[in-house]
Every structure is written in structure tokens, then in C-alpha cells.
Length: 107
Image (cartoon, rainbow, N blue to C red):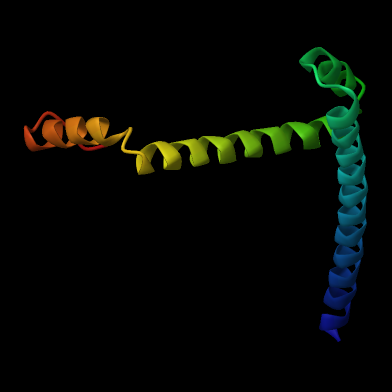
């Protein structure tokens, strides 16, 4: 019988999580609509900034988090492309030469 309370708590938690998920999906749809409108109607940065200023705190936080994640993704792609193109080879060789010469220290 002790599990009954736990089951009720789990069910309540799932309902709460589902509600949050629905709210997040709704917020993302709103952000997507804003971004879609920005792409169609406002090609310049100043117009985008004005739209961002109109976001409520929750939508702004989601946009900020998305931009940070997107920025990291773009950075990773650029590093991968630079590495594949050999643009980092000289840096790798320099680091290895310093290591071999005993000029490095453990982190």
C-alpha cells in the first residue's frame, strides 16, 4: 500500500511535466513564429532587435538558450571544417613540439 502514495506522486509529477512540456512547445511555437516573421519581414539586425525587445521573459530566456546552443553548434562546425582543411595543423605541430621539448605541464 505504500507504493500507492508514490504512484500518485509519480502520476502528479508526470502531469506537471506534461504541462510544462506543453507550455514549452507553445512557447517554442511562438518563438518559431517570431523567427519566421523575422526571416520574411525584417532583414536587418535593428528590426530583429526590436522584435526581441518585445519578448516576454520566458520567451526571451528560451531564445537566449537557443542562440547560445546554436552559436556553440556553429563554432563546432567551423572548427571541424578548419581541421579538415588543415588550417589547424600548424597549431597542432607547435603544441606537439612544445610537449616533446618538455615545455608543457600537467593540467
